[in-house]
Amino acid sequence: MSSQNVTQVLGIVVLARGGDRQTLYLAPDDYASSLSSITPLGEQQEFQLGGSLRSIYLNVTSPSFVQGIFGATALFNQSSVIVQSDDAGEDGTLFDGAQALMQGLWPPSQQEAIFLANGTTITSPLGGYQYIPIDSVDPDEDISLEGAPSCTAWSMRNEAFYNSAGFLEKANQSASLLSALQPYLDGRPVNLENMWNVYDYMNVQFIHNATYAGQLPPAYMEQVRDLANWHEYNVFTDTAASGIGNIAGRVMLPSILNTLQRISNPLDGLKMQFSAISYQPFLSLMNMTGMFESGQVPPAIVEYAAALVLEVRQPFGGGEPVVRANFKNVVDRTSPYQILWRLSKKSE
Image 1 (tube, one colour):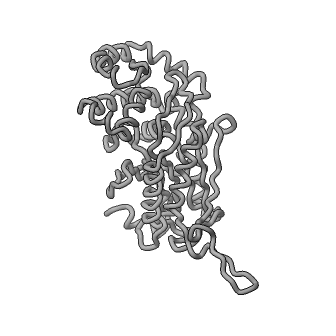
Image 2 (cartoon, rainbow, N blue to C red):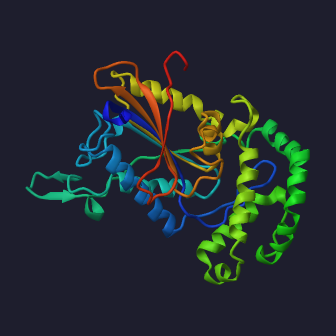
């Protein structure tokens, strides 16, 4: 029997990657980022994700309805929800995506109105637009959403990785492909150290430039993505959960665990925490929690507007809460991956 048929959802922690955007340069050693901007496609992806989350967790008829939260017909209630976005020097790309997602999660409502003494009713602009407060988290002041670029030990680990026998062997194996990519990179460095930037440039062009997409040999994009997945997995994971390679996920764990504990406390009132983040913490967190090892999720860069939802569930008859991880990697996929594990208070 499915766990959702015998348990109720007490609250959720939502981690969501930003939607489609323009090219984002990341320095190969410390991953310092350039500016970027979300596209209308990215805004739609985020909006659709918000609508999907709304149908699952705010719909009172859904088996995963969050108990105690105001339903889909109610207005946003700030006392039970925390919304935050990584502000990591990408010119507000993640913040803008979070705004679009919030509009899918809490769309305009005619209830967003006020009755005046003269008998008139005034509805908020744009048909009752709900202004959802979003906390922008600057990593220079708070590393809880992004800690890797500011970690010297992590950047030194990257340098060691680039000089390792395994990396040099991979570079030798991929040399012919990387050489063939030169005409498609507009003068950018084409080497394995720079693989994220090679992939990101090609991916953005492949999505937005019809001429480029038509000229690119069919197999190149898939091969480049495979190399980028290998590169990013090795940069943002480690063999031990406490390893420095997992730093992108490790910096998030204290906040996540604290929120899970708050949700499990019936006296607290917190029902949802939403965090807009880059793709990097997904790799670390999924590695640390055994999701990759389970084989249900590939060790790869998550798609635009992917979401990992940690559901705090409790049997209807009472008992110790458990955590279920619900991973949605494609916005329009109706059957997201389901990965289950238990997180007892003792283990926290």
